[in-house]
Length: 139
Image (cartoon, rainbow, N blue to C red; front, top):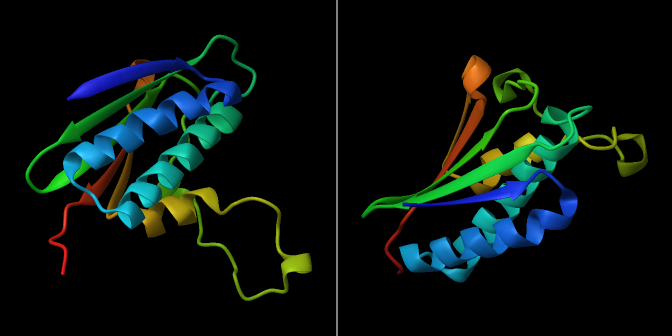
């Protein structure tokens, strides 16, 4: 298990992407799965920066990667405003692109890219977003 703490700023996203990509490769994930983890974490961190820390200066994001024989688990912790992803409705993907609402695909993408996505509001101890990618045998 290893943890990286970054300032909650968009210019720091490359650091967290490199961190999770390295962990994903060490876990033995294939290229497609590594890209999925990278994109899900980037999307989650972007949402934390934009929504959880709106109006809060000096926020941080802690990213912990844990590898076991079954999976790679990525836990993101922030201390911003709570945001329960369970209340996010699925986007309407049937409308013409010009009529669709801008944004709102982040949680949808995280759920599609990862095998498990779970959010916990810990009150004064922050918010936890746990995302799991299972290791699969190559065929």
